[in-house]
Image 1 (tube, rainbow, N blue to C red):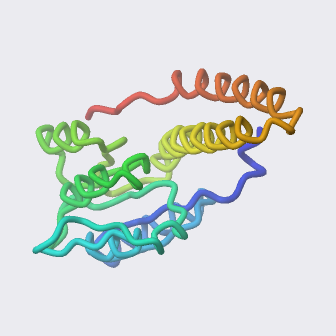
Image 2: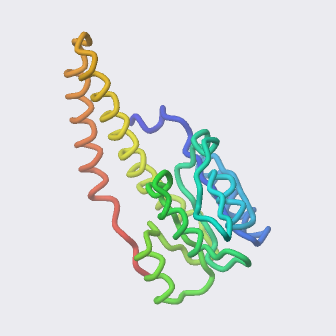
Image 3: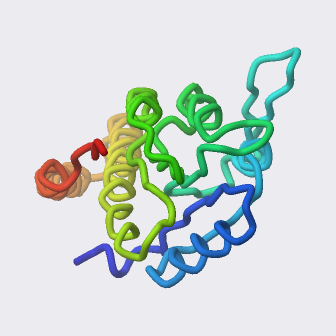
Length: 196
């Protein structure tokens, strides 16, 4: 598949507990993910280029564009900013809302799980996270990559419509649409919200 030749998926892992952070980092690396870890929601926002100031709305800075994060996995219970609050801030950002977010918690509280999924979390894992959970991440990343590909394709098409000298643009565009449709069909069968 084409996935094997693409760049390694980059996951931002957020957890205030050092042992939990090390465990999730090890599991992600074992599953061939590139991993960046931070110990708080505010550091995650900073890494993503979002800066939350109490007296002003969230602002996105240009340096955020250099950060290529394909998925965020965060603990729910953290001091300062909870994983739920981090999720809300990410989903409020027009630049980051399409990045899949997975919430982790050691407490199996159905109302908490449902609230996170309703707010836009793609998955909810119960701690301790296991290696088998890592296989549930790739469909979310692939879904995100399909959206990115589609947006890039639209941008390319708008540029090609301004420059009609490119004769191959329609055939390339056609093959991209076929690929996207095939990928989308596969993803439709594999991505289902998980309710615990």
